[in-house]
Amino acid sequence: MTQRQLAYALRVSVQAVSKWERSESYPDLTLLVPIAELFDVTLDELFGRK
Image (tube, rainbow, N blue to C red; front, side):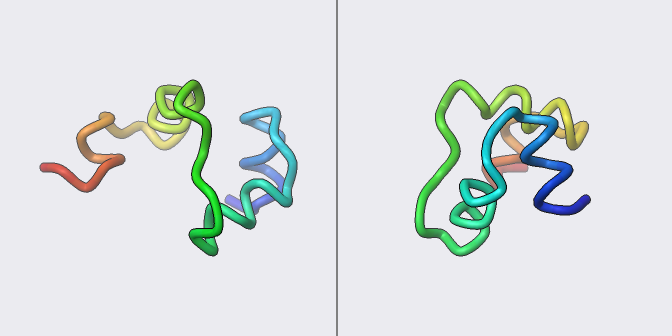
C-alpha cells in the first residue's frame, strides 16, 4: 500500500503518513482502530504485542 493510498483510506494527508513512517509524529488515537481494521490486525498486534 502506498502512502497516498493509506492517506486516502484514513482521510489524512500524505505528509502525515510520511511523518508517521519517519517517527516524526504518530497517528491520532482516533485512527488506531481504523488502521488496525485496514490491515486486518488486532490493536495488540498493531502495538507489537502478541
